[in-house]
Picture 1 (cartoon, rainbow, N blue to C red):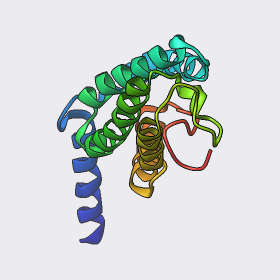
Picture 2: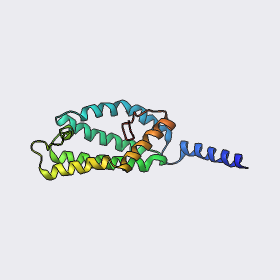
Picture 3: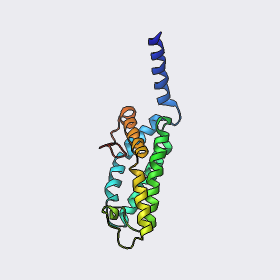
Length: 158
């Protein structure tokens, strides 16, 4: 009887992965298609100029699109991650500096103490346990279900 219940659970899970909520197949295809773009945006975000800020905004836009395609299994994780990254994007844009300008413990030139504190708070939220766990869950799901290795770029310890 336990084997039958386990088999029924496995079939239900497999069916849900392919049809529950948003289509897992289209989500996985989008992850594969956007993987290179995500890596490129990550490199560009490290620039110390306006292109760095543009890349951070582009990353938020791309992750928002992926969030909107995510299956139910990771929908809440995507919401958590995108919300935190959007907060950082807003704070950086309001400061007028590039994201990479905040890499040291010194306030960037032309950034007010309030703007600096807002960026620091947003960055701390990105490093919070719930956001890191959401990123790790997204990565694990991508690897196990979609066979896409996001390379520990969304959370976790990599």
